[in-house]
Image: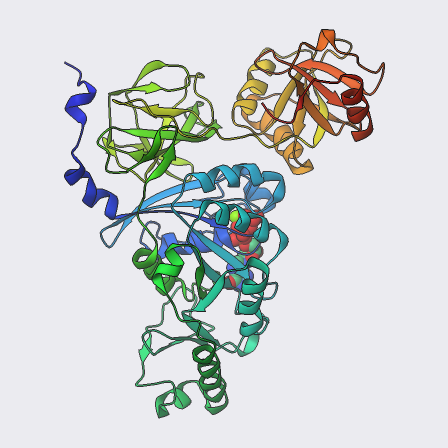
Amino acid sequence: MSPSSEDLVLSADALAPEIARRRTFAIISHPDAGKTTLTEKLLLYAGAIELAGAVRGSKTQRHAVSDWMEMEQQRGISISAAALEFELEGHHVTLLDTPGHQDFSEDTYRTLLAVDSVVMVLDAAKGVEPQTLKLWEVCRSRGLPVLTFINKLDQPARDPFELLDQIERVLGISAAPRNWPLGDGPDFRGVFDLESNAVLLYERQARGRRTAPIVVASPDSEEVAELVGETRQRDLIEAIDIITGAGTRFDRDAYRHARQTPVFFGSALNDFGVEPFLHALLTLAPSPGPREADAGLVEPTDSNFSGFIFKIQANMNPRHRDRVAFVRICSGRLAKDMPVINARLGTPLRLSRVYRFFGRDRETVPEAFPGDVVGIVNPGRMAIGDTLYAGKRVEYPPIPQFPSEQFAILRPTDIRHKRFDEAIEQLAEEGLLQVFMPTTGIRNPIIGVIGSLQRDVIEARMSSEYGIACTLDRLPHVAARWPNASAQGLFLPTSGVIQAVDRQHRDVLVFESEWVLRYTAEKNPGIEFRETM
Ligand SMILES: Nc1nc2c(ncn2[C@@H]2O[C@H](COP(=O)(O)OP(=O)(O)OP(=O)(O)O)[C@@H](O)[C@H]2O)c(=O)[nH]1
Ligand SMILES: [Mg+2]
């Protein structure tokens, strides 16, 4: 007999310890700051992998687990957010490595909806870069606590005070250093742990071999001079004076309320400072909390299972060409074979397979808890933003799609391929593109994206995952709008606007310029032209 959802329900008391040990966070930053490298080193330290792979490397070299996509490995950039789950020191950690490039920012944005806290990586030579600032705004609006890792100290870096000052000025959050760098670049000697009064020495030749921290009596003790030299010691004492004088003390409460970010210095590539950082993550980062839903806050200890889909990815594993929906669990326990309901459709479904992720790899799990990100195979009826629940109905807020900014006609180079429509449908379901079928003139679909790198990804994936060679001819068009009335009854200019329908067969207009859009709006008073649907 298969279990009913009541048999699988756990009480709040039984759920609480599972929830308390969970840490679910995303790593964010401007491109190239070192998110994937840090992810890989966190996995290495946690014992989840035995050897670290490189972001850029030859074909034969190991690649980072979170950059599993072929194009990620070829270009050395992250394109799609990857989920990694592992156990460490009694904690159950879910780490999401996100892409920094703005063309993929929608994927990163959706990932931020699924986590309880964030790690922000800064390049020590560059400080707060534009994309970091944009992502930080999202974190702020969601009240997500942020830990900062200032990376690449093995290279010439900015003055640490200047970096802290920049975080405070540009991001408007107080920055509390938890360790302090001893030099930088060729002169980098390590960090001083401000909490435990310990020197962590950086050994240039020690790649992979971790040095143990050396606890000292105080920053001005003789030992410190012996370890790092008198000049560095003087600089350190002066820095500590300034830090103490400025009063930016670490305050756990301020961190949890996103008013302060604890700051750590290190070098991900050299596996330096990663261990204390991971430890801080486990001890400081929050476990899953309540979440806003249609009928108020849902506590994670609520015994009714609920969660929402924040990402869909097709063909992750060449062995099973399927589409996986990533579900963030918000409350209750999810057990294998449990009947759940999709709130948008009102339809039941039985989750016979629940997966957990490790980059491209996945394995089935018998159960999962709030904070976990699990995969379920999507038979095509689930969409990003869908809520799944058991027991009492609940629905989480919809996940808006970013408006497309660039448009192109997508043509298969061969005659119409039979998998062409299916491929486009699946990539649209992932949110990698928006698709508009012209109702007059052009016979090929028009796709909308945010940036040009997405076009490269579409071309590459159409070819490698569906075996379809295609070309994308860029159109000059700048915006798609959904009128709140049938397009047939509208007054439309004779050129500069393409009439089309979206995947749900709703009328949509694609405009060649802002000017044509304004003109059309003026000629159709009372009609709304919506940016998203
Ligand atoms: N010198 C030095 N280089 C580093 C360090 N950490 C990362 N890098 C290098 O910086 C480059 C970018 O690293 P990634 O980890 O791919 O950066 P990312 O933030 O994941 O980039 P995107 O995912 O594309 O946004 C790679 O060439 C890394 O080897 C470090 O501590 N020191
Ligand atoms: Mg990356």
